[in-house]
Image 1 (cartoon, rainbow, N blue to C red):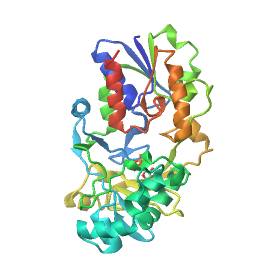
Image 2: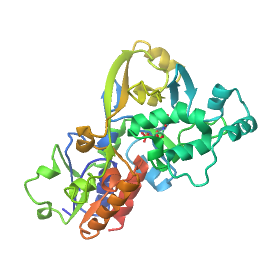
Image 3: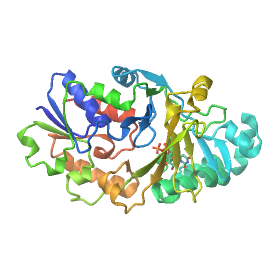
Image 4: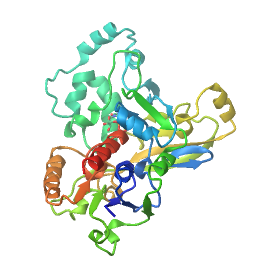
Length: 370
Ligand code: UDP
């Protein structure tokens, strides 16, 4: 083969497709028994269930949108989670409706005046806390962000880089869309179908652990595309990079359980951060909801795992790009420069907090650049 690709997630699959279309031969392996990485979805009671937490595709890049559109139909979906905290439900991400619910303000000018009173100005926020306080002040920071962030990352926001929260929009309009991108959608036949189509005609070996392969990969491929953790590839010789993972619990109910796709839970005493009602990703509208009264519905809860939990090492999901980790990653990236026959990619290989489109975009350009 030209490429042995380790990992059948968004990076590995998009790399394999692009390289194959350019006339290269690829073998894709994955330690899991399924493709699509953490975007994997499975049909349960007729509902496409996101097995590793909610994934909502969004992109502004027309090339990437065209690319994913080749592999299935997509239905526009606007992510506007609700936040359940202190017994109330709020609109989220923070927008004029949230500020109305909190403070009774109803116009951008009223909101701006109120915010100017509570903001803690900071020209160059050095961490997530300073950034948030400068945007929204103490009350909103405590209510919506501090507890959630501590649950998600097991660190105080002041010990985390601002970049983890700059992803979130903050608007003085009634627009409650989580993402700003031109294309925001969910695959009609499910994510797994999109990735199966992307990998169509490409050799795939599932349930194969790269580290337990008995034969040196160089014996059957010219180049290696590695989408696992870069520090693990190098046997942690420069120290460990930190990752955070989630554990998921599933429940089945009937009817419409929570009335919305995504709820966030910033309360410190609630052990999960999100609950997802999967059928709301694709099925909406009064007709469906009536029909749904007797139908099953699948709910999942996202539980952050503590830093020392084994799963963070076995199945890492989020790179923690604070200063120490970023510097350590740069050292690994330097090491990788000495082995140009190995291409590291994706969230774990590049140690980046990639969204699906970014992982795919990185894969396409790396595959084309060769
Ligand atoms: N966040 C928060 N409260 C929320 C949602 C998000 O404090 O209700 C913060 C939290 O620190 C989180 C970050 O914003 O890690 C980014 O959130 P996002 O929803 O983008 O995280 P992901 O979907 O990648 O888990």
